[in-house]
Image (cartoon, rainbow, N blue to C red; front, top):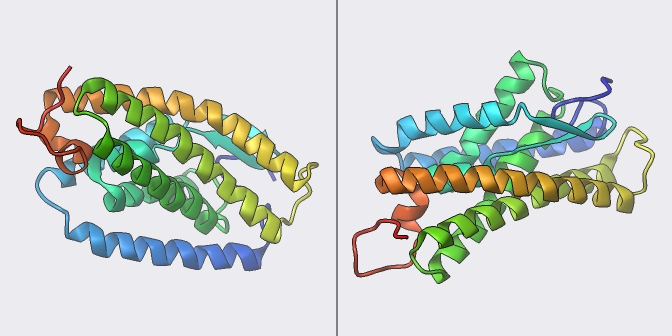
Amino acid sequence: MPAVAMHISNGIIDNPIALLFAGVALAGLVLCFVMGRRELDDRLVPMAGLVAAFIFAVQMLNFQVLPGVSGHLLGGTLAVMLVGPYLGAICVAIVLIVQALVLSDGGVTALGLNITNMALIGAAAGYLLVALLLRVLPRTTWALTATAVVSSVVSVTVASLGFVLEYALGGATDVGRSIGGIAAAMAGVHLLIGLGEGIITAITVTYVAKVRPDLVYAVRNLQRPAGTPQEVTA
């Protein structure tokens, strides 16, 4: 097992639990494909490609948390704010698959675990909070910025705690800490990572919303109704 690995490495979680979450990941992605097809249009297709490429790049920033387990930017909140929850989850999953199969980043047997945590849990947590905040906050730039930062922090932290659950169910490698210690390490590191990701997400989404608000899913579909055209105001 390498000293530092992208995502969860092979052998950290035992095979039965890894297989269980492979099934969870597959079922989740099938649902995302079915629901995502209903939202596809000329704006979302090219944007989804750009989002996947951007997430691939930012996920290369990698920090070791535990032996065989690393922390890094996830991009789930960025994806759901730009292309919606279903396509957002698919974008993250595609990045994880390419990293595991082509670059050997993350274990192949742990692919279902990583997809569940980062593509499904991360995107879902980010979307739910984005949808809540944008429907109660005013239609202003600062509200969009605050939503991106807060949702990113929560999304990244919740996604990291998915590993804690999986390790509690079937940890196969002694990482030298109790479950409580693992949870504290994962949450502590990912709170900081989430803050950095929130800043990147806020800058990216706010800029695109200023230039082309029609390309931002969150602006088009999630902001509270207003009497003016859908645009972000200062």
